[in-house]
Image 1: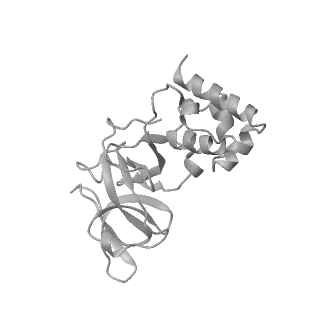
Image 2: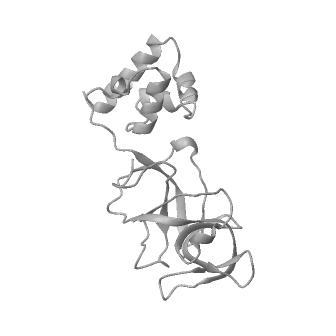
Image 3: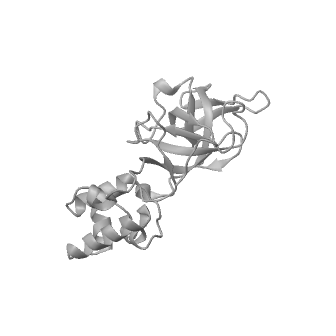
Amino acid sequence: MESGQMIAEAIDRLVKERGTNPRAVALAAGMSPTGVRDIITRKTKNPTFANLLKISEVLDVEVGAIIGNAEPTRPTIAVAGKVGAGAQVPLFDAYEKGDGPQVECPPGLSPHGVVAVEVEGDSMEPVYSAGDLLFYTRDSHEGVPADVIGHRCVCEDADGMGWVKQVKPGDEPGLFHLISLNPGATTMWNVRLRWAARVRLHWPADLARKK
């Protein structure tokens, strides 16, 4: 029996033994209402280790009771959306509580508090290419911290567009120049940003293992 089926059957059995239901377990685990049911019905074929750990805590068992002898799942990081490197792309956290697309956490990077976005466009060539993944951490929900100035950042402008650019001070307080690395691309002058966060890690598209 494949590991995904074993995990699904183990969770289904434990939910029934506890006299509860998948929705209640999912909500208690901080997942979407259908999160546990989707694992049991195999709609979610590769549940993240983080979610399995939360489910095991709600069911009051060791996570080993769920994964058994299945190969441990590498931690994953949520892919929040796309950022434009020249292309105009709305940036949004479309998937709540890790229910959307996931990518395996790169070796050496902790998954805690880290978000991934996919590059679209070519203004950051040859450093970042379309389809590459960028990992970042937002220290604050709003604002542009002083320590990101001069660095390559994931950022969101006042119109809700997401960008990956080098952020430099603008001509007035509260405005920023967004610099492209591709000499042929256009720099964005005096842009008002909602937030900016430094790129912590860049993963080329051919290395990313999406779930």
